[in-house]
Image 1 (cartoon, one colour):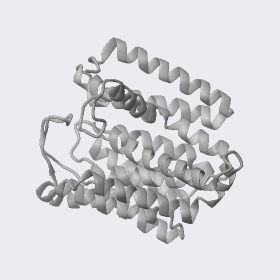
Image 2: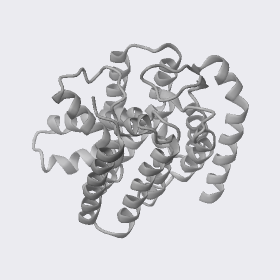
Image 3: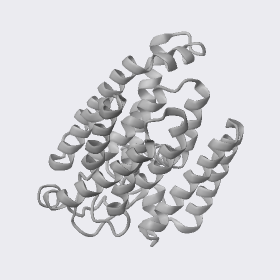
Image 4: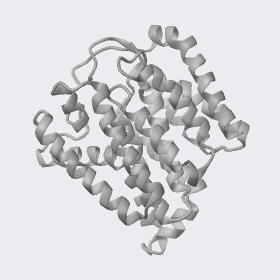
Length: 308
């Protein structure tokens, strides 16, 4: 039955995209700009395809957690079209994360309250973590196939812990057909904000803190790219809220690597961590994530353009 749901999601998302690409091309064009990694105008907001199909499948399955991330899809859709102010996007991200924490994060808050005696501080820490995950996924959605490809691997890996994810995997698998280099469609903020919010939501419903940590480590190739970039920008006294092309994946593409090659590097890294996640303990996962991070530094030194 689960495989049936995966296939239905794949086929319906594929047909949805085929039908709506002309509409998105007309009303949601993404034109090249100085902070982007593309040279041609292409339709964006393709993320509404997998959000719409997966939400229907989730309702059919009686699983309502993904629906709480839909407000961010709406915000992302408006941002794709009108470039809404940054503080509005951030405010709604914080509001959505807080709402999900209140309704679904009781277990994880209780688990970590044993380590942090003040419950308010615990809540604020997780609010920061959730908002960071949303933004990190959004930041990494800058080249063909990177976020969609890595998230397919992530959701396949954690499906054994959370279930109900096969329809989402099917929908993302259909989307990547159109998003792989040379892409015909971008997911836009409507897709990346949903994925980030949903990933945070799943982490907040983890049954124990070990699963929570393992999920963060699984996504570490993406998250550490963002964290190290932010730290370097702060060190260089740059405005961390201003647009840039300083992430490692962006500097690798700027050095001449193809989108597909860079995306495969990240997908392969997450896949290796996915195997470790499934077969070994958290100590081995930490060690593997550290090795991949060090290899990333070597990759940067040899192939990426300078950070500045």
